[in-house]
Image 1 (cartoon, rainbow, N blue to C red):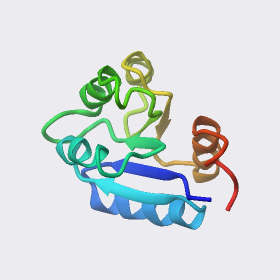
Image 2: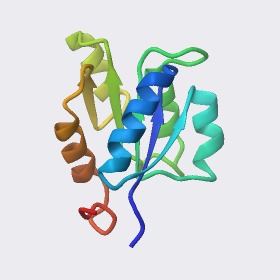
Image 3: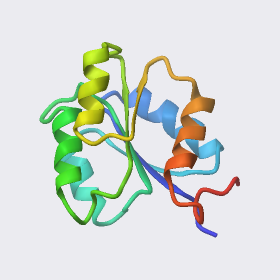
Image 4: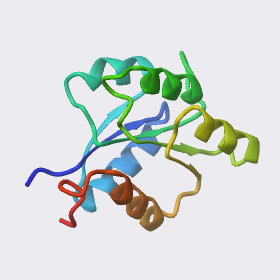
Length: 129
C-alpha cells in the first residue's frame, strides 16, 4: 500500500524541515514547496492527499492560494490545513471560509495534527504505517 502524500507549503525552511521529519516518521510521504508558485507547479506531478499551508508567504498569501486551489476542479477535493503563527479568530474564520478543512496555530500539537490529517484523507491511504 502506498503512503499518504502530504505537501507542506511554507516559506520558512526550518518549519518545512521540522514538519517533513515529523510527518515522515508518522508514515507519510512528504514533499514541500517554499511558496504558492512552487505548489502550483508540483500539484500535477505529485498530487498530495492533503496540503499543509502557511498563511504568511511571499508572492501569494495562504488564503489566496487556498482559494485558487479550491477553484480548480482538478484539485478542489484535496484537503487543505492551515498552519500559522496567526491565531486571531478572524484569521481562522477566513481560512475556513476560503475552503480549508482546518486551521492550526503554531506551536503545533503534532499528535493532534497527524490525527486530523488521517481523518481528512481517504481511508484506503490513511492506514497506520
